[in-house]
Image (cartoon, rainbow, N blue to C red; front, side, top):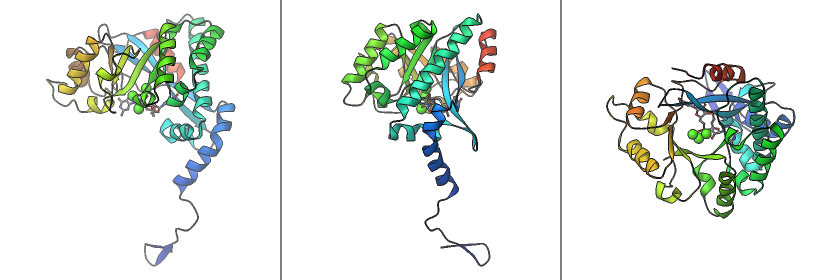
Length: 279
Ligand code: C2E
Ligand code: CA
Ligand code: CA
Ligand code: CA
């Protein structure tokens, strides 16, 4: 027991604290939440630094929970990866992305590639490319309307199946971005031969841009090397004007972050797409 306040004792026994209780409830309820369409996508734009136009959107999943309100992915993606439910969740996300793009297309809104996040298990599944082609076909979309964001954790051994899936997708014309670059252990020389079209520099490096004159040697090197490999560079987590200015001077191609827009619900994302620019 632990002493709390004057002379009161609280016993920490078999009962769970509220946070643990919430986590257990979320884990138990996630399968039904997927079936019942309690998940929802928010969308965060990417902006091309050459013309300041919106060059893409990223779909980020949230759970509109009947009791807890809007629950963010950090509270349920990891558990879905552990339980294997991430494959069903990922299928829901891909279908919702295609449905959204098809709605925008039907309304005459100019489409930009819609990126979605993919977990390692989805790549190991082997049927990912087939699933995506079927979805594109069902919704009357082209491969260029979608983009995959993978992380370095998708590229750990055994890497054979993942590479095959990525190459299939690339051949079909679907772009692939490598997310959170720099936060893990892979170097650009290791990913040189992978069918990756875009590198997203991890937020932690962008965060570190404090000087008004320099993005720092790591960001500069990533940009130079990525361009040498014919890859585009996106900086994520741009929160300040100074960061944007410095990244543009360093030759970064695109930016994403709260300075431009937070992830927003589809109605707001639609307004942004119609405006086509943010700044
Ligand atoms: P991520 O793919 O690296 O996505 C970027 C995260 O950073 C998002 O958090 C976004 O809201 C946040 N962010 C964007 N701009 C800024 C900024 O300027 N400053 C700061 N501090 N944060 C910013 P979110 O939506 O909570 O997602 C967290 C992670 O959950 C994502 O990181 C991704 O790894 C995962 N995730 C989200 N949706 C999905 C999904 O559909 N499938 C899978 N497998 N994972 C997903
Ligand atoms: Ca991402
Ligand atoms: Ca990221
Ligand atoms: Ca991340």
